[in-house]
Image 1 (tube, rainbow, N blue to C red):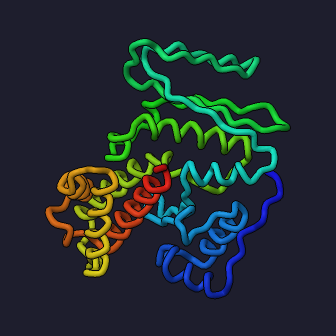
Image 2 (cartoon, rainbow, N blue to C red; image 1 turned 30 degrees about the vertical axis):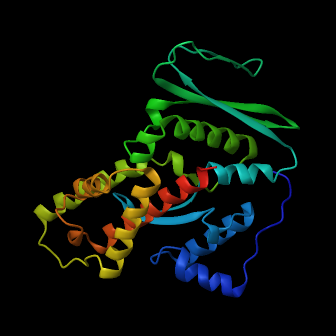
Length: 274
């Protein structure tokens, strides 16, 4: 990438970032790394261009620095050699071909377009060959309200992120559109919890606080609004995932997981709208 003006933080901003932006269980080293990534790519955490999440998996805690397609595009556009990006969704009935030798894409929409097959993207640089990627819809599709409502937009964003990352050597970031594996790992965690519950004596577990639940309810309302989804459907999805009958049965860690996820999803949707 070309040289860009690095984002600097005042002492007041650093204090505010630690108290309001990063997860409460983040370590000092993780916070320092987050700040380094923000500076390196000139992303503003206060406007939610980049977020930090920390959640538990079957192998322990995982920390992610998450941005969106728009974040990747902002990073790429800071390179003086940025020469644009083009992308389209491929559907059944289309004529589609990538010539790897000549780095050419041939794509013609069919008269009657069917189901989504995937999406392609080409990221161009003035001083390098273009980078072309194709992503398979079945490999990335997630059973979430956003993907169910905007499948074409989401798979197209995944293709663009992949092309931008390779062309402009962007590392250390995770795209919100790509992290479907989080759901798989969380299921594994829940299975381990159930197993441990049967094999070990029960221990006192910290439950979700009233403050957490109030924030959770507000985020559910906002997520329902921005996705135009029934609130009851979102609540039911949470209950089924965690095997509970009421939100008051959530543990402190579980509530934090849901809050982080909803905040990131709401940010992704809002930043992707024109």
